[in-house]
Length: 381
Image (cartoon, rainbow, N blue to C red):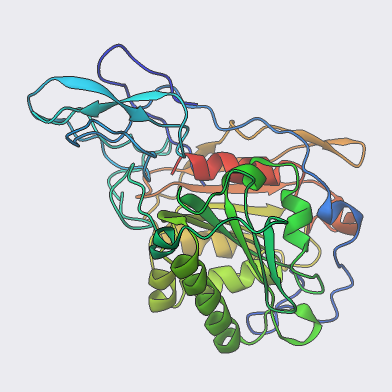
């Protein structure tokens, strides 16, 4: 949540952040599929709370737009400030911000993350706070009558009720777990703010057992679907995010190890759940989520995966508790999210090691705080 100061806003503390792997995918012998709790609506966890923030300033009209990825605060040149457009907690229209007048810019950008993020507003491309309409906005393609497009065994595209083909919406790419259909993420996102505020692209793998095993085939499909969305529908290409669970999380993280593919997708932030380590070729704001006792992963899988992000994001070894993500109820117990944010990173780097027993008691599923925390994290970027 952004709070407005009288003149220049103070620092925005932008706290940001399936199956055993065979190559990129996961083992078809994983006994856990999308059973019960894996597709339930997440229970409410506390959202990200920030102390104060400002919109991106400097345009002649003073429009603030969406808040960009965490970076250094830029002091504006002389000139009066005028009330800007509206911002939200990192996303589309919300509480009022302050933009720059034509005579000079106000204090722009967003403060670094609580862990000490410095600079690095470039993740996801574009200037912080700007909305960049995709080519498809010019087509003004109306929302489908049932709100979705389905290509059997290939993809689902879900549209918010407010989508009209002319206003750019953020885009979420969601990759399903091994043994799950791509409708898995429809169940996980149902009833969340993602449903009303994001266009959602849900690719489906063609690999055996619904596991993301063949990187070359899968990335070609994902990039084609992504390009088609941008060419034919109205999305904000400066605010594209991705999530994945298990095998889908591995596919997502593996994509970041291929620099040209990562740059093609132009992701502003990601949240993988229960992936495995891959080298990360580009700095990337991340909320990494895993079960502390996940029995579908090796003991060091999560630690090593997070280390790859810490290296790419130039983090220190030290961290502090990340308290905006709070406990939730699952299977009759209070879940401890176990979140920390690393110090000194160029972009927010958060690791949540939880104890939610869901997904058939494996701690391998998307935890009860997961969807809300992903949404809140992306809104800070």
